[in-house]
Length: 197
Image 1 (tube, rainbow, N blue to C red):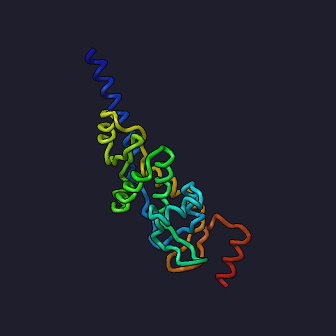
Image 2: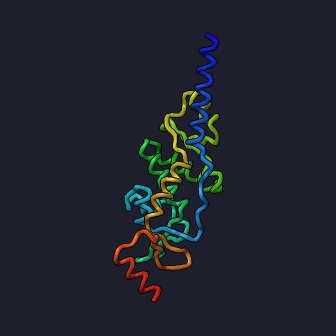
Image 3: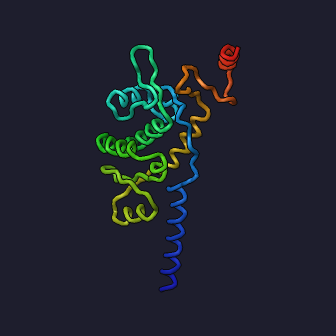
């Protein structure tokens, strides 16, 4: 009987270590601070509607940190971290977490540094949001019967990073778009030639 319990314990430890690799990744690339994304690009990367983006910006849930709208015709510009936050908000809303609790989580994430945020897994029971920084904290939360689902910020980070790599961005000090080299329709090539010449 003891041998069976030992084997089960070793399997559980192996599962925790495997989960830790998925929940608490450390191999995230630092992204430039001088690049921003327009609203439609942020919407596509975060899988939200423009109406949601606009509402969240107007109510202060997720505001663009690179450039806010300054009147008719101006464009908001969102940082990578803003887009990451939008994607996390979308996931939390999809799972039924209240907007009030999401606001608290967003404020906490906003106050955390980039290195800190990448090491967080958000757990929720549908009513409250818990921040876990290690696999042990996740196990403790689950053993207490509280956590129902989790969002590994590092996984969302990688997903958003991959999506944004194929979408246009803008340098903060410029008003022109930066089109990735591998994305090149005819209009983008003409713009590039016009700007270069």
